Length: 295
Image 1: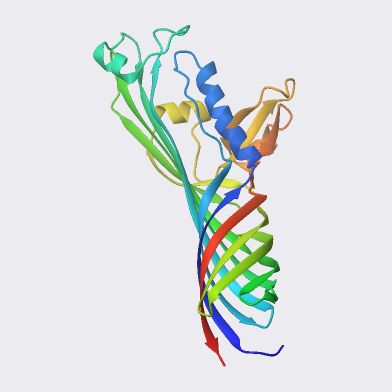
Image 2: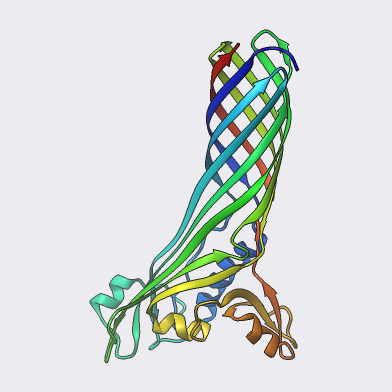
């Protein structure tokens, strides 16, 4: 390779789309749980479909070849606010609100639930691309990236109780770790860069990403929750998220939190599917590239 060497720093904003089939099923099962539980007013959840992403890249180019390291970070939060339950009316068909319960507390157990799930992911990849200069100031080509995906998540559930003999308010929080903690990520992309000046370029990039997390483990529990412990049979540190169904009724799928040993122990009565993160999908971004030439 002949010619000068260019050092570059790039800042990009973009969007990544993915299906996240099993995580979306978990959110749907949580919604279904509220529809099927007596006295609990149903709430709707929004699923994973994609996210805005910010990327920062350091690279070196000589001729048509470019080598770089890219970091990408994104967060996503799901919140279910003011979800009321009232066990005095197990056949309720009309919607109630937490304000209704506070204004006129029922005789039996009732209350309001606040839930929040946060996800943070940090992919880091080494990249190589081939982008010849087709005309002055205009480059286009293809590239490949290989790296790892790290991250974390958390689940928080707080409940306020009202009614006769109401218990004190409670709150529980779990960290949720991908298992394993670090997972491989690959990207295939095409890119076009227009450089009106030698020191500045505008690059458009699009492609396909392959990235998966093998499972999700509950860590560092703090606090307590009567509602959460009743719904998920008192989950503990190290338990994992599963989708479970009775052996006699495979279509009756439900979210279950438990250990791998417990799943194996009751495998004669239940089928189990470990919840995994499938983040395969397309992505697109637009970046500003700042170049420094080394003769």
